[in-house]
Amino acid sequence: MITRQQALELLHSHMKSENLRRHCYSVEIVMTALAKHFKSDEAKWGIVGLLHDGDYEECKDNPTQHTLLMSKWLEDLGETDKELLDAILSHNFAHLDRRSLGEGGVGTHPPQNNLEWSLYCCDELTGLIVAVALVKGKSLNNVTVASILKKFPEKHFAAGVDREQIGKCEEKLGIKLADFVVIALTSMQSISKELGL
Image (tube, rainbow, N blue to C red; front, side, top):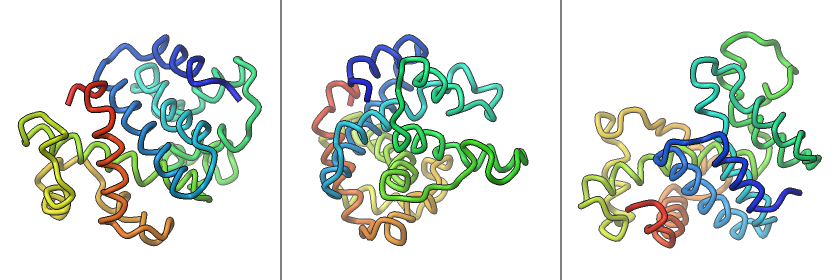
């Protein structure tokens, strides 16, 4: 498996936006915390989180290539860990399926295990947490679990955040929404300086 340093270099070579990089750092730290919760491979889960959107800037005009390009870059680096590659590919299953690439095509499978569902659910939650931080003095230290849960049902707030996707944490991961928010918020607060919040 590639190292975090290799993953970071790969991310930075293809992603120039600081805000997008910070999103990837957020998902990385939350995925690491979720790996700890599930007593799984923290390094692997962190790399999946760090790289899940790493090809976004190069694919934003062609979403059907999103995650396929990252998978290719990883394979070019010699990555052979199928669990890691599958988790990244599963992240874009909705786009690929919507464009009728056919069932069974590479990357079209929806999340199937704790690693893939954790990525699916926490990806959107990090965005909601950042949105709450921005209205709370641009500081994660001002954000509480209660303030996030208060904004959760307000559809006009951070309207682009898919609440249903976050809420799958209960059914698919067996983690209550409030507990899921605790894991995500606490881990993001631990790297607040890196996130600029």
